[in-house]
Image 1: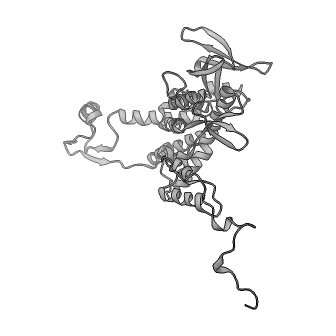
Image 2: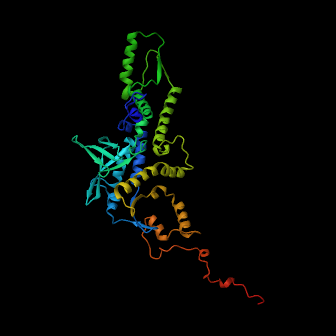
Image 3: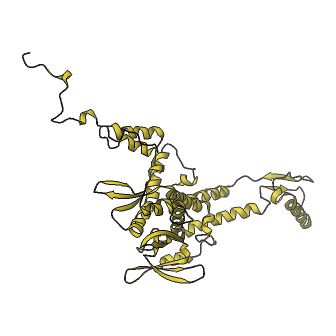
Amino acid sequence: SEYLRRAIEPTWAGVSVNADTALGTSAVFACTRVIAEDIGKLPFLVYKQNGARERERAVMSPFWRLIHDRPNNYQTSQQFREYLTASALLRGNGYALKTYTNNQVTELLPLHPDNVRAELTPDWEMVYHVTDNKGKTEKLTRRDVFHLPGLTIDGPIGVSVVSYARQTIGNALGAARHSGTFFGNGMKPSGTLTHKDKLSADAQKRLKEQLLNNHGGASSNSLLVLEEGMTFAPITMTNTDSQFLESRAFEVVEICRWFRVPPHKVAELSRATFSNIEHQAIEHVTDCLMPWGNRWEMGYNQQIIGTNSTFAELLYDALLRGTTLDRYQSYQLAAGGQAPFMSRNEIRKRENLSPLPGLDEMLIPGNMTGGQNQQPNQNNQQPPAGG
């Protein structure tokens, strides 16, 4: 298939690119880390639906511990989500083994995606061929495996971003290798030496060895002493050098484009403006993180919970919170504006404050309490006609 062809296609830069070597590129590592850590640090809450309009946090539900606290005995919820999200980013899919107690999922054990081969059978059933540490392969079903796919082009199985971005990542790795060997060779060609007379081959060899021994490697910036009227002329940065640096910066932006991460999130600030940084942060949440958050929510709700009365949901408020002044102004509108929809205790809850007595009722503006039973204002009554 086209996907497999891309996965084994040699890179133009002549370097090996896979999910592991790609992390050697700072931009790939940073993009993976930004998405995985942002998804991992968000609170994952479990709600119970009470009627058509009311819902409450189901802190006593067994799914609360599994989803909100810890999915297994050695990982927190954040660590588990970071691992599966990174697996889906780099390899296309994240997997975890379900364990049951009384026919209910009580533990999720992460599986390395290289040890799992997902397959859609002719009967439209998903099966997973899982290989353990001893090399034994077992055929499992959707009941046994929690599956988090990334972007998919065939329906059930996600594709790896790295496989499609191999040429871009290969260029970045090749540029980094070229830069490393350039400086690692020791004697940086920062200038030229000129002698008034012609040097013999032996003299050139001795001079080269002397320069490499005394001014190469760790001594590349030491004092250079010239004899016999030799002169040194420094070499300034050429257009080729400038284009090389520009190409390295461009590769960072290209990799960010593959992962849909704003460049400023990975410290690429060459074209950044800070006049709208808050809106850029909101776009990062809505355009980059929410698709991954939806995958997690739907995966938990369909593959773990499986009921309509209980559901899991990520809370994005921590990433969408503005400045203190912006929040307080929005709270003022939400609780005391012309169309209030929040109580003061609900606001306190969002600010991690304890509720206070008497603040559960919403404030009602005076012009919204009117009706047939409203008593006229005595001070504004008009005198009777002819009075």
